[in-house]
Length: 259
Image (cartoon, rainbow, N blue to C red; front, side, top):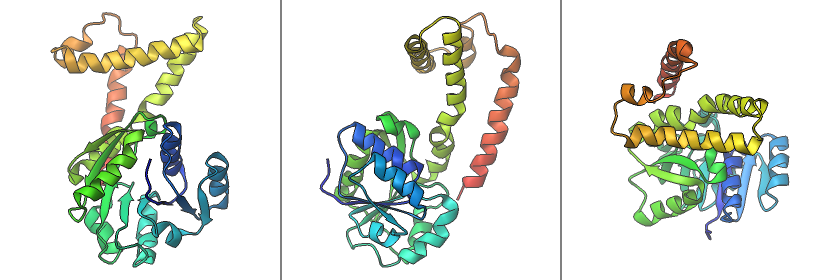
């Protein structure tokens, strides 16, 4: 897919999502260097993606690539980045996959290096169905930006936006699947207990979700009218509790990750 060398600083969940998405699409770029402090994490990744060069504590090697994905948890960034000052090539593009740390702050931690982009990754990217909001530093040329877009394209939708909106997307889309997966797995299990096969239950849940969002977007009805289309609402009495949990907990998370 790409003749650019790729580095990952951090070999955990996000690296696996990106590598899995590229691999499933037959678009695995390379060579790829992945660095992590945990040898077990790297061994697991190497078993699944044999072409990857996995280096324990190899952040300097990962940073010396054409495109580098910063895939560590936000609390680790202030310690990790200053150690990488001067390690990047003059043409390197560093793509941060973390909320909270702005392009300006990342550049500061890197001693002025500003060939930067930020992406809020989305787990469905592992099957090419992601929604990955993206913002660029003004220092990147159109050609640079196209390199990043091409790398993200096999993972799903690449939504370019203002940097100031990325934390809102982190709550809405980055963490969003976690709000629904427990419910969806439970619905599928209930469907099976009611006599459906697992493929039937999954197909039904998949289509009802797509149809639910399509109705919100395309019916021309307001929220109250849309929700009134179905007369029987088995969970109506617990909806206020669920909505309160959404409002209070997600607002708290947003406040915590705001720059």
